[in-house]
Image 1 (tube, helix red, strand yellow):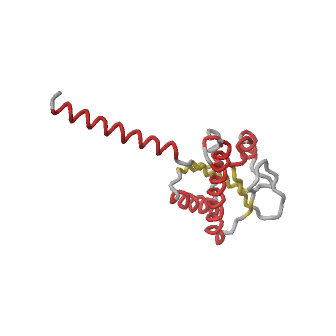
Image 2: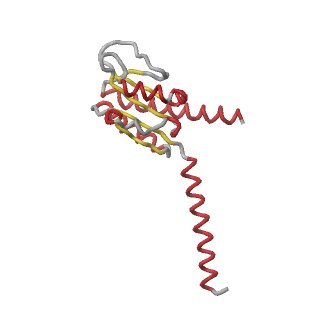
Length: 164
C-alpha cells in the first residue's frame, strides 16, 4: 500500500466517522413547529419564542397558517407544535380546527394559543388554550409558552423511558 493510499484510507475513515456523528446529532434533535398568522402581536410572539427555543438547541420550523402553512405539516413530525390563532367571530379559524382534528392523535404535543377582543369560550380539541393580545405582555407570554413546551417534551420523554 502506498503512502498516498494509506493517507486516503485514513481520511476516508475520519470523514465517515464525522458524517455519522453529524447525522446522529440531527436525528436526535427535538423539532418544534410554530404556526401563526401575520399580526403585530403574533409575529412578535413567534419571533421571541423562536429565539428562546433556538437557545435550547431545538430545530424550529415557522409557518404562516393563514397562507395554508399547516397544509403540508403533520404534528407527528414534531416533538411539539405551537399554534397561535385569532379568534374571529368567537371561533378558532376553521382551517386550524380542521388541522387539529386531522392531528388529534398527537393532541398532547399541540399547544393552541388564541387572541380575543371579547370574552368567549374557546372550543378546541386540544388543551393549552390561552388568551393574550397585549404587546406589552408578549415577552412574558413567550417565555411561559416556551417553558410549557420544554416541560411537556421532558414529560413525554420520561413517559417513554418508563414504558421501555
